Length: 309
Image (cartoon, rainbow, N blue to C red):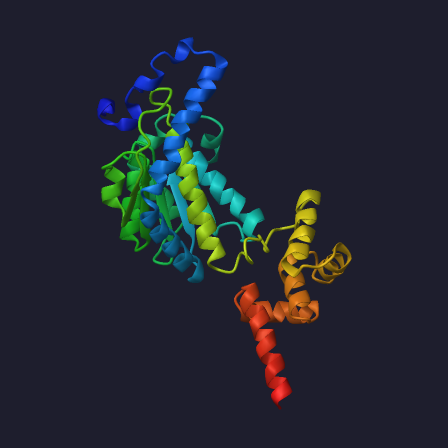
């Protein structure tokens, strides 16, 4: 039997001991006050988050994957972050993967016993054929979920870089990973409800890891998401706005460039800023591994060489 009382995530919070008697505004104020501790606590581990970002960039550069592994709320947060990477950064499915104990059904309903099955974590990692090019991030608010521990152990055996994200320290999963990100936000407003502060902390860290990894591999130009996938009206409008902002141009020129580029913002931007056609912009981006700044620099270098001849 697990000693829950030893975990900070399971400790009662004296600041909210009368939670059931609070007015709606008092509840909101109490939760807001406690949530301020989350950003502070995450701020204490930024050096370790930065290391995870660096490893994430290495994985993507090596055509590897970022794999999140978790159970319950932690697993759902990993799946959420993974799913959002395709429309935000234009990466194919499978580049960022979210594994949750119990599989897809566990995203919307509890799968009893799945999180306690260490062997299930092992088999899920084996099922992905995790290898040395991948980075596996294990998520557990308690820091001791068997499913996550099994997955991390197996990922290390298969040569992957491993990261543990826990909301207690020291943590079991922290000892099983190459990098431990252990953030302590204090007791929850509602005792043991780790979907609250612990969940917020994990989401903040995942946002940093995925965004930091992606923008380091050419998935942004400035702070613009230039690889956004224009799959609906809102995203098509966003692509237009991105081209306008990136190029400092008007809507009509941005629209024309987007049309020539098949609706994709990145080649449209290169075509305008490098003063080339869409086909040449695609070629420059391929040569620059998708990096807009490098593609524009290549065009400028080529133009200078031609002028010198």
